[in-house]
Length: 174
Image (cartoon, rainbow, N blue to C red):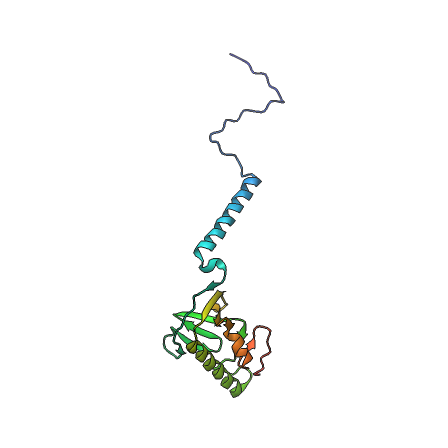
């Protein structure tokens, strides 16, 4: 029988059952976090339309009508909202009065709203245009810019006195 003397400086022997460390080291945690973030960025770039950036459709020409109470597929809701092939688009960077309720301007506001809606319908039906999308708003509408010959339709409506800049423009119809 052999006797092993106790040595206080000697570490006790701990056999490992696997090659894995007992705890996750900070370096391993950082590496895992970087990997997950990179994979998320690649997935967003691959699977989201436009990779989280603006998506521009090729130039198109579509026939619109004014939206009614039925199914909305391709129609003008008001001067800043349309449906295009079943997608609800909120045209961004400008605002028009609401045609269905007067918030502050009474009948004059409603009349201006109908003129803005009619003008948008005329612009869309009379020209080829491009659509650029930018995500969604709080009502789950797709935010978009529509351009005719490179000019934002919102800028056209603003220059004609039918809309205001949004969000910083004054509601002149009030």
